[in-house]
Image (cartoon, rainbow, N blue to C red; front, side):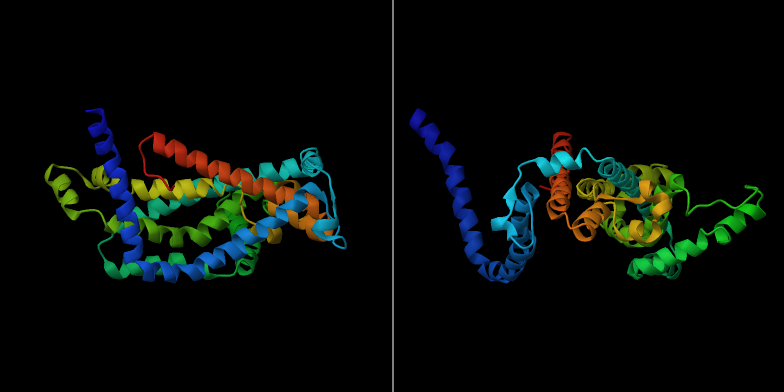
Length: 318
């Protein structure tokens, strides 16, 4: 009896293995087509990881990685003893969280509003107008923001005309405003593009669910709450997991172009820190250690978010 039980327990595994290899052989054309992309990823994404060795070296360009002296964890110890690096971690996390919250909420709200619009012409016009900023250069976007938020810009003119302030607000020169300016600029630039994903998820919702809810007496807000939002929950969870993995990537261009020496304590991110020490000061080991720290934390956050989502019974990325 025990041998029969063992054989029956092993059978499904062998069947699965045969099914996997049969599918693999039957789709060899697709496997062949994926080889160039696989080589690209290995060459340009995993190949440069060999450079992480310099994070544990007192790297000298003339000596190279093979000739430079190994210093162990000294570069990391030096990093976490620097107040400017700790400030860059704080700034990066703060701006990332603001971008994540504002970007996600605004994208879902805009997608819901567009989904409720019945005039197709108006709907397409709004979609086009909102996602066009995604294609603008960040230099142009920051230039527009500097003009709008200047002391004599449109925002200050509006605040003064409404008598909400007595004198112009120095948005670009006070650090307490910098994080929120970055959040507003990111939302304006990317909200339309991010909305496309949620609108696509809403189109896959069965229309009969809306009809059944309407027959049961559900109003428009109730249909959104009980049909639309549950219908896009899986998309929201997957995007949230991916965005959590990028919490230490608040951006580089906006902070570099919009920042100045006046707001340096609020604008410097890890990427700017790496640029400053890696290129300007030529401390390659320190810069590599900072970049390595960011990558490792991103992997930990991604795996942790995926694990928590799995434990809660939600969709997962991995």
